[in-house]
Image 1 (cartoon, rainbow, N blue to C red):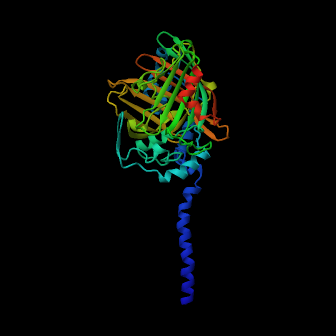
Image 2 (tube, rainbow, N blue to C red; image 1 turned 120 degrees about the vertical axis):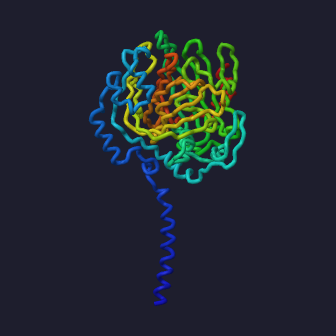
Image 3 (cartoon, helix red, strand yellow; image 1 turned 180 degrees about the vertical axis):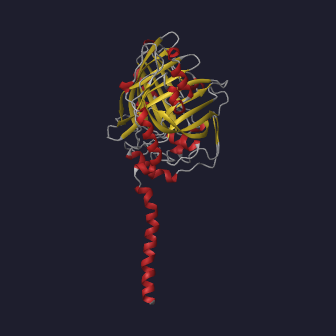
Length: 440
């Protein structure tokens, strides 16, 4: 009997250890869908499919927008009811079926690898623009030690959601050109823009070696953007370089080669709040938000169902001359996190913004912006699409977007042309020396 008991103990010990180790394995063996689940569970999806029987394929315009207004930002509903104010005979979009948008395998693998070790630093610190508070900054982020992927796959707070948004990388390298005018809806006047852009991630890389960061990275760069302006004609030959640092104590570097003067000029920090070339966005806006996470305080408001554009195709955009807002968007029912963010600088150009952050992709679908007096000022409608990178990985990225000034009735219907994700780019392209060489 004692012999049998000993055999049982000896056998049970390895089994208990096996159970212990196996309990940790699901984190490593989870599928992409388990790491980033669909926004609708089975019962919710059944209700969505029933709703779609009535709405899929329908054109929504001023005549019927009230029937879906609870699924749209109030700003968009108001605009659609008054198309003439925006230089249009009608503003409309089409409803398409909801489709789950899974993250790429590379992003999922990076998330599973690095996110378990992510934590907030208990220490705060001062920066040239204000203070980063304790438990607000990712520990090791300024050195590229947080790896890649989404740091908080099960995000619960506004700050965690904002850090996930910061982690979007579009295949590590991407090229595209902005094609679209600035439009004065009151007069119908247009000022066309055509601007090729190159972007490279130095850290937070998932798709292209080296991952998760280019080494050496002595300047501590997070990502960099290089842009050439071919239109409007008065800006032809202007080149722009924007360098985003990992350490928030370092201001982002922005330089412009001005063809007229054949000189490089550095943008001041305060200039980031200025509008870009007569558009209705500033340097911090882009397709949602483009600056350090900790420049703002972030507040999660609610999770909400909306109709948003997540499977847009560039060819579906349509508008007539003088129309300051796109029509033809393909919108589907989905869920978003509503995030309110307020810049810590009391003199900042915006008093607050609300971002509609897609719960599956962490892309910004809409954004509403208030001026210093607390009046609604600007509105962003962003259209997302699904692409393939050069390596064959899925890339979820904006197809186009529209910032409008609801006070001055001005807008910029932009589309991204010839996108290429994951192509080869040399880091030295994103230097001041390169900017000077191409200028001369």
